[in-house]
Image (cartoon, rainbow, N blue to C red; front, side):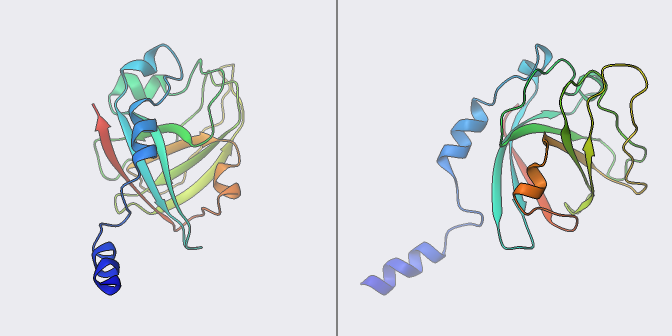
Length: 167
């Protein structure tokens, strides 16, 4: 009987559903006044170190949302962030964090879900902002609180997937 129960547990989808993360994502904080209208998603990160993470994020999908980004956001709670998704699978060029008053981690994700580059973005409250460019095509950008990737053993080559929980 015990073996049957174990076999039943092994049949669960990977990653396993995380009710707490799902609830957190549905209630994902609006970072600024515009972010309240952004879709919400769960981001799954699989690190080569064998560690898996589930984050609640807002998603910027429209040109206006991508331009606004995290501008005007006073603080970004840990394990939350902004996922910027481009319509083309091979977007080129960099991003700036104009109007952001905090240090951010910025990961560029290709169309296969692989992290191709990670930068630490410094605050930018003027018009001379640094352009963070991975110098290769990408499909999405994940912006999280400073040093999140380092603290959680996530690096270039790790994989990222996401699922919308509310549009």
